[in-house]
Image (cartoon, rainbow, N blue to C red; front, side):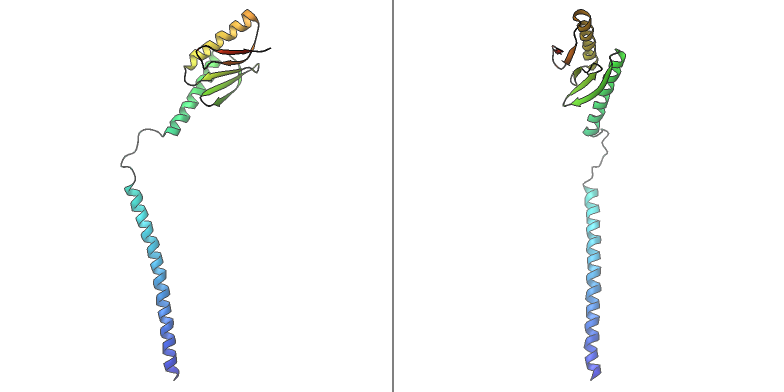
Length: 148
């Protein structure tokens, strides 16, 4: 009688093992199939060429750095002493040593703006003996705010 009862238990254990291992290998197969599908899909949607142009973010950052370097070299060339340069929207704000602020436009030629600054500085100090608190060179006519 024991033989008849043991046989179904062994068979049930054997069936459970088969179900467990088959589900385990099925799960691994699905994961591998998904990985293969993803790798093939990503290769099909990759462009067939490499662009010779840099991305717009890198190009924009390089242009900002170039403009900042032009400001620094132009101010040093004209012997205009400054303490800091900051960026605000599409303008650069230069703080001179006497704490006056000069706003340069990134849309205009930097060397002409620096020449205008040098001209304004020389004429204000020589002719009138006055100093300015802020100077905005973004417009056709510079906007000067004199110190009281």
